[in-house]
Image 1 (cartoon, one colour):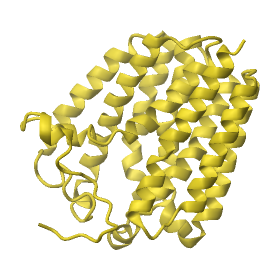
Image 2 (image 1 turned 45 degrees about the horizontal axis):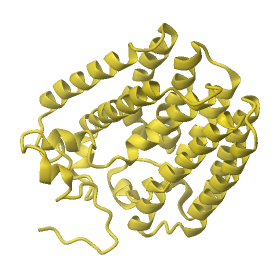
Image 3 (image 1 turned 90 degrees about the horizontal axis):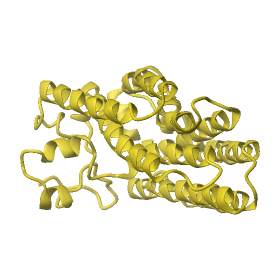
Length: 306
């Protein structure tokens, strides 16, 4: 058994629900899709839910919420599969990711490609439940999903490209409701990009030593000890653009109250972040689900207050 420091943030925790309940034959595929780590699904889903709620002048449609939830689970898994195929040699050299199914040899590249095809097919079936404009918009996101894994080799800003990719749902949710795009959705998308720049910089600080050794880039490496001022800038832009989206959509005081609470949460992340402690980074990263839920509650409350 490999010894790890007390503050080491493992990528795959054993003895979770997959090990306890899933048949042995499908466990590697569930891990490949990150089914045991739902935070990525939440961070992909929440901009979708924000946008649906922002585009709906009353309670958001429960069926649409459910379809987007399933779609986020499937497409996050597909994105992870693409990422792990592309990064298999890098992952094998990084302590936190060496046990991932492709990097460790549990799943061959061919089987991973077959699994990816099944995920994309299911994602397409879900996408086809929406209007034609939303379908076209959704399919176009595949370009971003395919390109993202290569960005860390090309630029110190792969987190920016992840923001473009992970917040596409802010556009797609609005399109699914209205059949078009409008300024509130654009502002929401921009807010999500800055939000992702913040939270994924936190996440990247877990890997910075390994990233230096293997020669890949990140905003964590670019900012180093100056991370906190950059985070303040990113999160200030997030709050400002979220506020602008709410203003354009005509949201009232419940939204602005939630925005203030959400802003305080982001300030807490910055103030309590310890970039030298991987466990601290992981917990602050995961806490972004709370920010997303706070904002969702505010949007729905504002839409239904009247």
